[in-house]
Image (cartoon, rainbow, N blue to C red; front, side, top):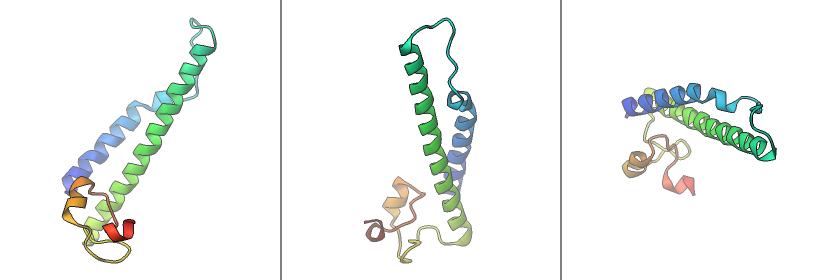
Length: 103
């Protein structure tokens, strides 16, 4: 499980670096004229920023899961202390709550 989480974290960091340019301030292509070019550039920037925000959230959850592994608390609900469940962890190993506490 640790290896899978660390591999995913590496992927996230690689993608974040590769897409940094897309999150930067929009500069208009001088060859393209008109509102549609500007709107398209702004939409692409907005999409890149939202994707980055989601990746950062996933990275935080992965770091928390790795810390739970290190502490011997992985697979146990952080709220009530009950088992999270193997099937839930198989779907998303970053889950920190059992099904009852997640409701």
